[in-house]
Image 1 (cartoon, rainbow, N blue to C red):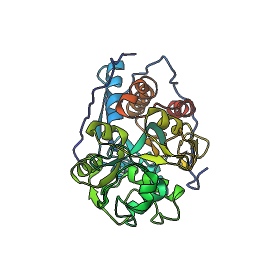
Image 2: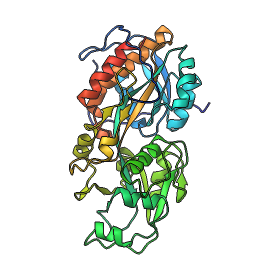
Image 3: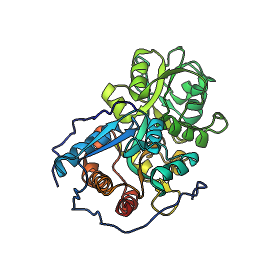
Image 4: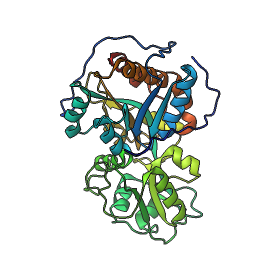
Length: 365
C-alpha cells in the first residue's frame, strides 16, 4: 500500500473547539446520537483513509476542526484518487475511503465481506464544483456548453477558432490555436462525474460512456488533480477539469457553462444553487445521490457541473474504538467543519443532505 500522507491546509478563520438497481441494503439500528451542539470524542485517536484528490483540502480542514474539538484526534488521508480509495477500503487497508463516485455494483459484495457481513454505506460529506480550467492568453472570459465539451474531449472539435465556440463567445478574440484537452490518467471520480454530465446533457456528442477511467480517447493525460493543473498551466491551448479549489490555488481561469440561457459563471452562489437540486436515489442510509436534475437544469443561476464526494464506511462490523472514532470525525465534519469549506472552494452541505447524513452517522455501529 502507498505511504499514508497527512494533509493540512490553512483555513480562512479561527477554528473553535466544541432507487438504485444495485439493491443496496441499509441498516437503521439506533445507537448513540449525534446532534448539533454536541461533540462526541470517543474511540481511537488516529483514523486512516484514502481516495479522492478533490476532497483532500476539505478533509484537511475537517482534520483541523476534529483535532481542536477532540484534542489528539487525527485522520491520515492519502489522496491517491477515488478508484484507489475504494480498492483500499474494500481490501481492509484503511478505515474509510473518500470517493467522488459511490461503490460500484461489483464492489458491494466484497465491501460487505470487509465489513464482516454488513453493507458499506456511501455518505456524501463534501460537495464541490468541477472547474474547466484553460490556458488561452488574453482570453479572460470563455463560455462553453456540454456539447462543445463532449466534442473537445472526444477529439471532434480541435481548434479554439471553431465557429461554434465563436458563436458562444461573441466579441471574444479566440485564437486559431489547437485545443489541447487534459484528462486524468488515474482512476478518478472527477473523471466519472464529468463523463456522467456529458452523457446526460450531450448524449448525441458523447457516446463514450462513463466510469472512473477517461473514455474520450483523445488528449494528454496527467496524474491526479495537481497533474492536470500543472499540464494546463504549461500547455498553451489546454483545457482540463479539476475541483474548483485547485483552480483557485493555481490562479487558473475557468469557463462558464451555457445551459441554454447564456453562460453560467462558477461561483459560490451558482454552485450552491446547483447542489440544492440533488436528490437521493433511495431511502435508507446508503446515501447515493442522483445528480441528473443538476446536469439537465437550465436554471441560469445554477452551475451544472458539480459533484459529491462520499465517505465510504462500514454500516457495522468495525471494532468499537474504530466505529466511535469514525462517528466522531464524521459528526464534527458535518457540523463544525462545514463553516470553513467555502474558503477552500467547496459548497456547505444542504440541510436536506445534512439531515439524512446525521441519521446515517447515528446508525453506524
